[in-house]
Image 1 (cartoon, rainbow, N blue to C red):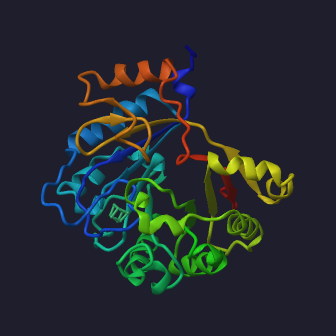
Image 2 (image 1 turned 45 degrees about the vertical axis):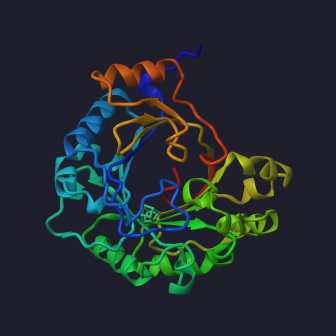
Image 3 (image 1 turned 180 degrees about the horizontal axis):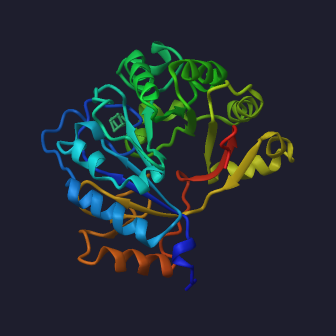
Length: 322
Ligand code: SF4
C-alpha cells in the first residue's frame, strides 16, 4: 500500500450532474440522450457539498462539472451561484453551447478569477462539426463569443477523429476567431456510444496521429489563445517514445498526467474513471462522511488510475502553458 500526502496530491474530479441532454452525439462516452424521460440529477446541494469538501482536502484539485448537458440541470443557476469564488479558478463547466444562459446575471467570475466555461465544438465548419453532433456550430461559437465578452475564460474542446484530424490548423483559427481563450483537443475513444460498430472508422490511425501531433506542435498560436492542449491516452505513449525526441522537443511544454481521479455520477454512485464510470465504481451511493471516504481512498492510493482512455500525456502550448 502506497502512502501519499493527501494535500499535495493532484486530484481530478468529474461531476456528471445530470443525465439530461438535448443531443445524441454518436461518440458520447457517458451515453446521455434526449430520448429518455427517466432523467437523474444530482442535487445542487450534493454538488456544492462535494466541491467544498474536496476543495478542503486537496489544494491541487480540478473540478469538471458537466452533464449530460449541464445547463439543462433544473438547478443550474443554484449550482453556479453557490460555488465559492475562491474555488472558481479550479472549476470547469462543460456545455454543448446550444442552450442559452444569461451571462450578465450568472456569477461566472470572482475576485480570484473566472471559472472555465468549456464549449464542445467538433470542427471548423458545420459539415465537419456535424460528423459527431447534430447541433449548429454557429450556436456554439455564439455562446463562446458571449462568454468571452463577459470576461469568462472560454475554452473550446474538440474530439479528434479520423475525419477532422487533418484540420487542426483550421480549427485553431476558427476557434480563436470565435473568441476562445483556450483550445483543448482530445482523442476519440471507443467507449460509451463510441463503441458502436459504425464508429470504428473514427479511430485515428498511426500516420494521421503522427501528422496531427506534428501540426499541433508547429502551428502558430493565435494572439488571443492563451493555452492549447493535445491530450493523449497511454495507448499512444509507445509511439511517441519510438519517434525519437522530435515531438517531445517541439512541444513548448508537456507533462505526464497520471493524477488521482474521482467521478461523481448522476445516479449517486462514485467511480474512479470518468471514461468508464460503470466499470470503476467504488461506492454505490454517497457515503455519509464524504471527507473521510475521499481521504481514505487518496491515502491508500486507490484513486490513481490509468486506462486506455484517460489522458496519460498532454502537449501544452501557449503563454499559460503550466
Ligand atoms: S457528448 Fe455531450 S452534448 Fe453530446 S450527447 Fe453526450 S452529453 Fe450530450
